[in-house]
Image (cartoon, one colour):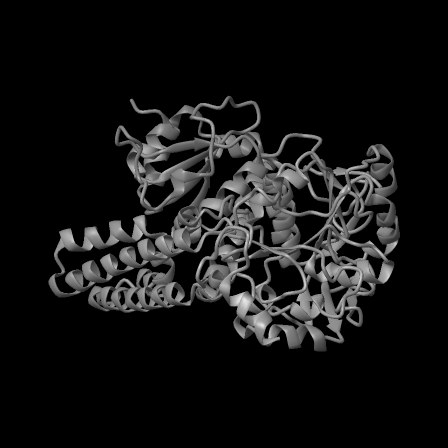
Length: 559
């Protein structure tokens, strides 16, 4: 006689799903995995031992192309807490994947609170994954375009990795532009002899107003925020770490040294490696999270946040002195909504890339735990802020304890960060007497045009191959041609990124003729190949080591 749990698992498996999150099924999750063909994520009820393989890595089992383990059985993962479940779903769910959340009835009766917590975590994870995919839908084409515009400007510059010798072993203060920065910005004056000050682009105005000089300015902004870095005096020549997908206006500065980097987006990984622009920097949706990850990768630590409110707790959404100084927010506590005003600067910046403009007059809010030791205190936060916060918490869960500090002294609590007042954190840091400006060592070789040209040629050949295969698949509809095209897209993430829109649209419309899909893939592949050739042609001649690129020499001669 079959057990009740086995019968229940088979019943659940009868409904189609790509991913199943199951609560409290114990060892019978193997039955569910074997009969459903889906990836199964097991969440144990209270008092239940972990029976399936524990979760490791970054959730590769949810990859749509990996539907079975090496022995042919569907993968089973076990997550032991709600944060891990939320993180796994947020990072690994793919577009159009069907997710089911179920609970073994006996376990739900035994531990109803555990099931509710798991269900809410799954909802959060799906919401975060949806936000990520929507961001890609809206911004990916622009990211590619900006990257291609910016690549010619990196020749002769040093990559971000060349700053590692100057940052390694230093405490780093990551300065955001939240309103709580007003409370402690002046304390940063005494921080320069104890830590490196790394500012996001929107916070530089506040530092300038307070007479504080940053050591490094970071920006990953798709929008043209170059006005935030104009008209500076104290911070005019501070080195800038810029994402290659940031707006081209940022890269064209001659006021300060620019250190370019690729963000850790899978579509650019092969190009970054081939061009020697490593390490790639994890992207968490906000400039502050990228700055934090960058400092960590370059060996700085501990890492200390200030001005990272991620919440509305007063009338100002930004610190004084920023370009958004005039903005105001009124919170409606009854309806859980925020009403923003004086948005002219926001709208002007947003108009530079309209599809990426998130400016809103009215924003829905939800209560979250506040910064500080009082676990019952709460503040109002937005979905966008929560996305940034969950990304930081996910990153903190993989970071050794005692490395991350939140000295914002306001705003939202960020799980995994030690919360201390900035004065207390600074008092604990030793004085340093090696406070030279950040600069790449003279012995480090700048970015090479020859290597970059080879990387672009390789990407062009991959695009041309996909075009050839897609044309064949569109004509023949042969399974082998279809499989070869799909395999080529998997191996060529940059080409897949250029073809993302037709791929997602076709997946969402099963009745659509796949001839249209492969014709669209071929069309987008040709556009990408032409763009790559264009970037190659625009690369300046690589000078002898130690000299400026030819482009900049000509510019100075014209001046």
